[in-house]
Image 1 (tube, rainbow, N blue to C red):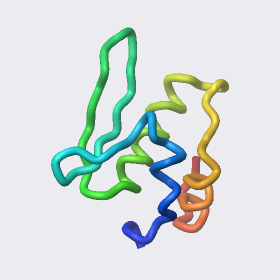
Image 2 (image 1 turned 30 degrees about the vertical axis):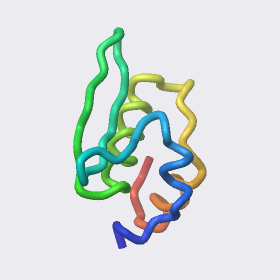
Image 3 (image 1 turned 60 degrees about the horizontal axis):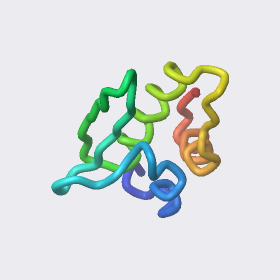
Length: 78
């Protein structure tokens, strides 16, 4: 199930996730320092970005509709 996600998920979160050396990367910038984390799947990277961005940006963070749909199907609370 983790690998069967909408292909538009990466497009929606392009600034926060991407592919790198056969892995998926979640990145976020805090105080001009970029923090990278690497994952096996695009969904894991997207979920990591979502968790970190929601904590960092608080009320100003808006979840990607495609990620929201995937998390709803998986039963993940956000």
